[in-house]
Figure 1 (spheres, rainbow, N blue to C red):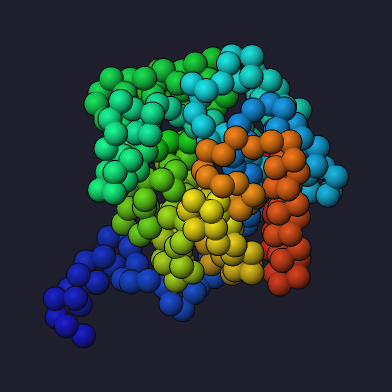
Figure 2 (cartoon, rainbow, N blue to C red; figure 1 turned 30 degrees about the vertical axis):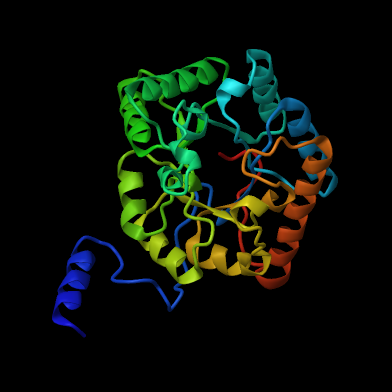
Length: 300
């Protein structure tokens, strides 16, 4: 081995980080606080009507959904819609995650829509946008929501500091989006250090990379089991049992292939199709990793 590479690997090891991607795919012994290895999440549920249809359909399959995620942004919802979604979450004992806006795609800059600018993801431009993002959290928090989808690392750091200081609910949960573009153990470690309660890596992360990321952090990892056409359209259901084994505790983000884009305005029919996808993923787990432990109902 090259001496320079060897010294880098040794330094990483001293920092408690993996020396490379984990091609041996070791089994993760880490768990959610309730002992579970995996939970289900359905993203792209943009309003109360669709959320109710999703939860009713999940019930019809005899399944339990741990997390529902809205992705268009809090500013796209009325107070009444937020309150209704919070009420549904309480009724079904599920966690409601609301996306923070504004973000790059709704800013006055057109940079994000250019081939080069797309690299900025959904990050915030300017301190005023950071303040507005905080206002999104405060508003939804007042209406009963405590879980949020964050797209900007600086905003995550600030929200974590506000949480520690009691400026926002100390029970707030922050999930970093796949749109932030992180896919390695060092980035995951940094995100956890600045306040991430769960991390959504890039959608096409491979098993050996995912296993290495798990070694670096203790927080939950959120993994796409499938994707909208706009982000590849791939379906990874057969990989799910191994994902759970090597990367627990894990949120399985399921149902995305129903949509055309990340912020697709899902219909009631779409919600039912997303519930079916959860059923199909559960079948894979039952078939190929039946001993896997799912978090019980009502745990967050």
